[in-house]
Length: 162
Image (cartoon, helix red, strand yellow):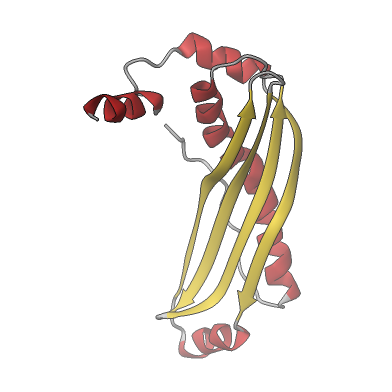
Protein backbone atom coordinates (compact mmCIF):
# COMPACT_ATOMS: atom_id res chain seq x y z
CA UNK A 1 0.00 0.00 0.00
CA UNK A 2 2.91 2.35 0.70
CA UNK A 3 4.08 1.91 -2.90
CA UNK A 4 0.71 3.09 -4.22
CA UNK A 5 0.89 6.32 -2.20
CA UNK A 6 4.44 7.05 -3.33
CA UNK A 7 3.44 6.33 -6.95
CA UNK A 8 0.55 8.78 -6.60
CA UNK A 9 2.84 11.41 -5.16
CA UNK A 10 5.27 10.88 -8.03
CA UNK A 11 2.43 11.28 -10.53
CA UNK A 12 1.71 14.80 -9.24
CA UNK A 13 4.12 17.09 -11.02
CA UNK A 14 4.85 20.70 -10.15
CA UNK A 15 7.36 23.30 -11.28
CA UNK A 16 9.32 22.73 -8.08
CA UNK A 17 9.21 18.92 -8.26
CA UNK A 18 12.58 17.19 -8.15
CA UNK A 19 11.80 15.32 -11.36
CA UNK A 20 10.50 18.39 -13.27
CA UNK A 21 12.17 18.81 -16.67
CA UNK A 22 12.17 22.31 -18.14
CA UNK A 23 12.99 20.79 -21.52
CA UNK A 24 9.91 18.51 -21.53
CA UNK A 25 7.66 21.34 -20.30
CA UNK A 26 9.02 23.73 -22.93
CA UNK A 27 8.29 21.13 -25.61
CA UNK A 28 4.67 20.85 -24.44
CA UNK A 29 4.38 24.63 -24.26
CA UNK A 30 5.73 25.15 -27.81
CA UNK A 31 3.52 22.40 -29.23
CA UNK A 32 0.18 23.32 -27.64
CA UNK A 33 -2.33 25.21 -29.77
CA UNK A 34 -5.58 26.62 -28.43
CA UNK A 35 -8.38 25.25 -30.61
CA UNK A 36 -11.45 26.45 -28.76
CA UNK A 37 -12.74 28.13 -25.64
CA UNK A 38 -16.39 28.42 -24.74
CA UNK A 39 -18.57 29.32 -21.80
CA UNK A 40 -20.40 26.19 -20.70
CA UNK A 41 -22.17 27.35 -17.56
CA UNK A 42 -22.78 30.53 -15.60
CA UNK A 43 -24.77 31.52 -12.54
CA UNK A 44 -25.25 35.20 -11.71
CA UNK A 45 -27.12 36.70 -8.77
CA UNK A 46 -27.23 40.34 -7.72
CA UNK A 47 -29.01 42.18 -4.93
CA UNK A 48 -28.88 45.85 -5.97
CA UNK A 49 -30.56 46.92 -2.72
CA UNK A 50 -27.37 45.92 -0.85
CA UNK A 51 -25.31 48.20 -3.12
CA UNK A 52 -27.72 51.07 -2.38
CA UNK A 53 -27.43 50.36 1.34
CA UNK A 54 -23.64 50.41 1.09
CA UNK A 55 -23.76 53.78 -0.67
CA UNK A 56 -26.19 55.27 1.86
CA UNK A 57 -24.30 54.14 4.96
CA UNK A 58 -20.88 54.53 3.27
CA UNK A 59 -19.90 51.00 4.22
CA UNK A 60 -17.23 49.09 2.38
CA UNK A 61 -18.01 46.33 -0.08
CA UNK A 62 -15.64 43.34 -0.04
CA UNK A 63 -14.62 41.95 -3.43
CA UNK A 64 -13.11 38.51 -4.08
CA UNK A 65 -12.52 36.25 -7.04
CA UNK A 66 -10.87 32.89 -7.61
CA UNK A 67 -10.42 30.24 -10.25
CA UNK A 68 -9.42 26.61 -10.42
CA UNK A 69 -9.02 23.92 -13.05
CA UNK A 70 -11.74 21.31 -13.27
CA UNK A 71 -11.84 18.02 -15.10
CA UNK A 72 -9.35 17.40 -17.88
CA UNK A 73 -9.25 14.67 -20.50
CA UNK A 74 -6.08 14.09 -22.54
CA UNK A 75 -5.70 11.66 -25.42
CA UNK A 76 -2.01 11.29 -26.28
CA UNK A 77 -2.80 9.41 -29.51
CA UNK A 78 -4.70 12.43 -30.93
CA UNK A 79 -2.77 15.11 -29.05
CA UNK A 80 -5.97 16.79 -27.86
CA UNK A 81 -6.66 17.93 -24.32
CA UNK A 82 -10.14 19.05 -23.30
CA UNK A 83 -10.51 20.64 -19.91
CA UNK A 84 -12.58 22.90 -17.77
CA UNK A 85 -11.67 26.02 -15.83
CA UNK A 86 -14.05 27.34 -13.15
CA UNK A 87 -14.25 30.93 -11.94
CA UNK A 88 -16.07 32.60 -9.05
CA UNK A 89 -16.47 36.26 -8.07
CA UNK A 90 -18.30 37.70 -5.09
CA UNK A 91 -19.08 41.10 -3.64
CA UNK A 92 -20.15 41.19 0.00
CA UNK A 93 -21.89 43.83 2.03
CA UNK A 94 -21.21 42.76 5.57
CA UNK A 95 -22.16 39.08 5.80
CA UNK A 96 -24.54 39.19 2.84
CA UNK A 97 -23.63 38.43 -0.75
CA UNK A 98 -24.52 41.46 -2.82
CA UNK A 99 -23.32 39.81 -6.02
CA UNK A 100 -22.18 36.35 -7.07
CA UNK A 101 -20.97 35.06 -10.42
CA UNK A 102 -19.82 31.53 -11.17
CA UNK A 103 -18.74 30.47 -14.64
CA UNK A 104 -17.15 27.44 -16.27
CA UNK A 105 -15.20 27.45 -19.51
CA UNK A 106 -14.29 24.54 -21.73
CA UNK A 107 -10.85 24.79 -23.31
CA UNK A 108 -9.48 22.61 -26.08
CA UNK A 109 -5.77 22.42 -26.94
CA UNK A 110 -4.27 20.39 -29.76
CA UNK A 111 -0.76 19.66 -31.00
CA UNK A 112 0.15 17.48 -28.02
CA UNK A 113 0.43 14.08 -29.68
CA UNK A 114 2.38 11.58 -27.55
CA UNK A 115 3.30 14.20 -24.91
CA UNK A 116 3.68 13.24 -21.24
CA UNK A 117 0.27 13.59 -19.56
CA UNK A 118 1.77 14.99 -16.34
CA UNK A 119 3.34 17.87 -18.28
CA UNK A 120 0.16 18.43 -20.28
CA UNK A 121 -1.77 18.66 -16.97
CA UNK A 122 0.75 21.11 -15.56
CA UNK A 123 0.58 23.22 -18.72
CA UNK A 124 -3.23 23.15 -18.77
CA UNK A 125 -3.54 24.12 -15.10
CA UNK A 126 -1.30 27.14 -15.64
CA UNK A 127 -2.32 28.34 -19.09
CA UNK A 128 -6.08 27.68 -18.88
CA UNK A 129 -6.19 30.17 -16.02
CA UNK A 130 -4.69 32.96 -18.11
CA UNK A 131 -6.59 31.95 -21.26
CA UNK A 132 -10.04 31.92 -19.66
CA UNK A 133 -9.71 34.89 -17.30
CA UNK A 134 -10.28 37.66 -19.88
CA UNK A 135 -13.53 35.92 -20.87
CA UNK A 136 -14.62 35.72 -17.24
CA UNK A 137 -13.62 39.31 -16.61
CA UNK A 138 -15.72 40.42 -19.59
CA UNK A 139 -18.69 38.30 -18.47
CA UNK A 140 -18.46 39.86 -15.00
CA UNK A 141 -18.48 43.39 -16.46
CA UNK A 142 -21.40 42.63 -18.76
CA UNK A 143 -23.52 41.10 -16.00
CA UNK A 144 -22.77 43.93 -13.56
CA UNK A 145 -23.55 46.50 -16.27
CA UNK A 146 -26.82 44.73 -17.14
CA UNK A 147 -27.79 45.04 -13.47
CA UNK A 148 -27.06 48.78 -13.61
CA UNK A 149 -24.54 48.43 -10.78
CA UNK A 150 -21.45 50.61 -10.81
CA UNK A 151 -18.37 48.53 -10.01
CA UNK A 152 -14.79 48.55 -11.19
CA UNK A 153 -13.84 45.68 -13.48
CA UNK A 154 -12.06 42.70 -12.01
CA UNK A 155 -8.31 43.33 -11.77
CA UNK A 156 -5.82 42.05 -14.32
CA UNK A 157 -4.27 38.69 -13.58
CA UNK A 158 -0.63 39.08 -12.69
CA UNK A 159 0.01 36.17 -10.35
CA UNK A 160 2.06 33.15 -11.30
CA UNK A 161 0.98 29.58 -10.91
CA UNK A 162 3.95 27.54 -9.77
